Image (cartoon, helix red, strand yellow):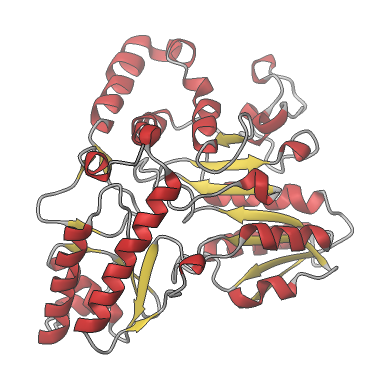
Length: 398
């Protein structure tokens, strides 16, 4: 049955007069989220108190929600768990992968990776000692750079700035062929494009839930471990809830079974309640159809902007096979232009040094929204209304 995008749009709260093209940074709120959080606060925390860990199933949420996300990323049940932040999950995956390939010392990534992934890799290398190093290459050179010195290939499938998409299966195959492991960041993939971790042969994957999965600001991250590694991967962060028997209160750590060993801290119960509500949206949605419709909206936007404005350079690949779920244009005054767009109700975001970034999620964006966004964009560029001091004053978050 085809996905009814008009029906999915009705499931989201979108402020009047706003065209929201920034779900690739923070997804909007689903309408059922306030009631679900209110239940967690009043009926569960308020009435059950600490009994909520058992009676409301709080302790089981990371695995239960992990299985639901697993359906969207081609992961078998019991291979995904939620918790902590994406940076922590990157650290865990990298550390485990390096330990599983002890004769090698190089982490290979690319210059299009999100900086915090690179920061975590740099920090891990320093912790392990000077013999470990992070090597970065241009995104288009990643495949060729995989050689027999590489221990782990760590890439974000979709570039956070340009929307350029790596071919996961091909790169993973090349990594394995050269004796390396593959760690994938799905921050701009999960809920945006079809992903099949099992078929691609990924060793580890990580991702966040506050973008396309709409869990709200500060939503928990997730980690995937391939079943073949489930009992071999050693968690570098040996947290209480990753212990085989947390409530035995042993003084020495014993890793839990399978994916449970990748749990670290206390689950963010209220945030997971929001995610529970948001995941209901996916019950009757075909992710392949979502991506096809996203590409149509992107094409409409690109055509409209390029035909009605000047001075902008498309930073996103034109090929559908190379594109995720966002469109980016370059302009020397990109920040000011984005602030002018936001002031007119078209919300995207800016990524230094010169990227105007727009996300196209057909679950709540349609052709009329895109047409109106193009009209606003053209007007701002025609009249130069972005060229005002207030639009050039940098905010803390861009």
